Each structure stands twice: as structure tokens, then as C-alpha cells.
Length: 315
Image (cartoon, rainbow, N blue to C red):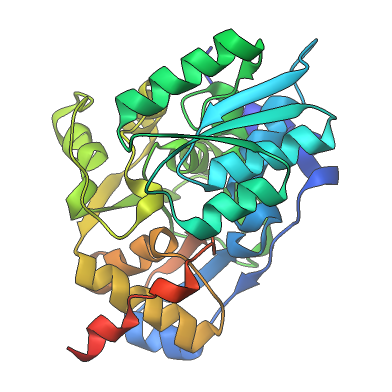
């Protein structure tokens, strides 16, 4: 089922009672550092600490006859699905890779999710989830590759566009599985002249490579601090991204850490490494963004506080 702009609008109405309208923050010092007029959509303040609550609520709200849901996730989608299941009185089974951050496992458990660990590979995640669905009869809710997920994630951009008083020229989102970037692109389709640019770690650049060739990449071994962006871009997501996204930029690990530190120190808010990736893209590709009115979706704020990367900046 192809997802379109009106699906995002309907999703916004559907999920409104269950999610926050997150704030948009600005910083004169960050604008000076980045050379652009930047509006930060703070999904780190969202339910479960990430934009994923939007897609999960939108998907679960449209299930009929389900008694349980299941998925695989490195963290944020798992917590979001556990939260959504609780809202609608369902049981949630969450397959998580063994190397998922402890803070994200704790969040899934806190929302009542039943965690099943697996090897940290895409194949293991999918196989374990399929087995769990067979054993429990749960309804599988994909972490990103589904129209309802894409439409729900797009509501963050829809809100951002309405919250900024003058029109944006560019809107940015990180890309892992592609739900947020695809949804953002669809939301932006309702605004003439608004360009959408994705950002991705160079160590997990399947979406960027596929975008440039027009052929979705199906295998990679990711190596990035941005744990939420290690997944391959989904089939349905890639189709939307190919048609509606202007470009996908890649960034270095050092750039991600620098951007994360910039947001922490200037906006005084906690964001995770994945959320810093678009900011890193502005730092590393300044010629694209100079002087622009720019919206950035800060995707989440679930970090392992005992393993912060900032000490690397002093090396």
C-alpha cells in the first residue's frame, strides 16, 4: 500500500491524544556556528524519548482483533511499540540484539515489553521475530518498513512546518530504516519549494549509496556510534525516499560526536548520537546550508550516560 501526504495528515489526527506536540528550539550561537537559521524539532522530548512513538501508535491504533504485537528493534521502536501496546491493552514482544544499549533495553522493560535477545545481525533479528510471532500469535509491527509507520513518523515534520512562523527552505532528518526520512518527505510534499535532505553515518551509508544509484542496497556491515541508524533502509521507505528526497549526505564519526556535543552544550538538552547526524551534516557540508531557513528533526534522546563519547573530543 503506497503511503501519501494525506496518510500523514490522517495519522496526525489519529495519534494526537497519545503523543506530545514537541517543542521547536532555536539558538543564536548554533546559528552562528552552523551559518544557517536552524529550527530544532525536539523529538527527544517525545513519549519514550523518540519520534518512534508516533509510528507505533499509528500502526497499533489500526490493528483489529490483535491480542499481542511483536517486533525487532535496537531500542527506540521496541520501547515505542511496548508503549503503544500498553495504550491499547495489548501484550508486546520485543526482539532486541544482544549489543543494544542497556538504557534502551531498560526503556522497553519499563513500558512492559517482553524482551527476547538475539545475535546482533539483521538476519537474526528477523528470524527470531518470525519465530516469536509463530509461537505467540502476535501481530508483527515492522520497525520502519510499513505505510502506517511511515505516515506516523511523518507527523513530526508536519508539526514542525506548522510551528515555524515563516516558511522553511530545507528540512532534515537522519536515515536508518528510513521511516522518519520517508515520512518527513511526504509531510514536506504539502509545502511548495521545501527541500528534504537526509543524513547518514559514513559507516552505515546504505541509503546514501542506494539513493545515488537508484538501487536499494541489501547488505552492509555498519560501523557507527549512531546505533539507531545501523539498519538497512526498508523497501517501501526507499521507494518514497527515491521519489521525494532531494539528497542524502554522509558524515564522519568525529562529526557526529562534535554535533552531539554542540547541541548538548548550546541547547542544553540531551540527544542521542543518531539525532546528531543531521547537525553533523550541516557542519561538514556548510556550503549546502549557508544562510538557509532550516528545520532539523532531533530524533531522540535515549543515551547510555555511562558511555558518552565526548572525551574523544579532547584527544
